[in-house]
Image (tube, rainbow, N blue to C red; front, top):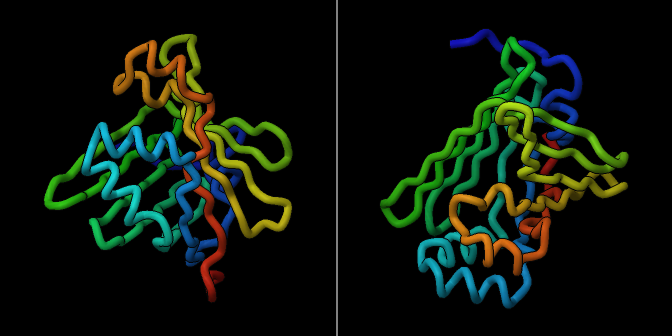
Length: 183
């Protein structure tokens, strides 16, 4: 395994700004039309989305070297891990279990990019091309964040026509401090 160190440039703590031990309440903020389309396309995705709404995410180890988020819902469990690598890149991985089925993903060569004072972006690099996958927009209060996903993150799952019909980015989740949410 590659040694984990603080990456040159923006690090994980620039993207994940809540302190360790924070508990965040999840609100799915997709439009009704997108929720309906997801429900028609995948009953598991619809079940997960429904159970995720109102769930609590726990944040562990938010440093430039590593960060872990976990969430337990009535439909299953989700875990996300980000590692800062010695070469300055980040590795992101996740595991989502729904009704006995498990889906896993791993993304290599991810860079954190900073936008406006309240935005952090996760972009995957392939050769000279950077594909922005996720935007995290923090509220000025420091207690909220909206997570949006870009069409590039869905490229393997959607036809080009479907991607063209979707807004880019798609606001997916709103995270707010849960009662007693600070460590």
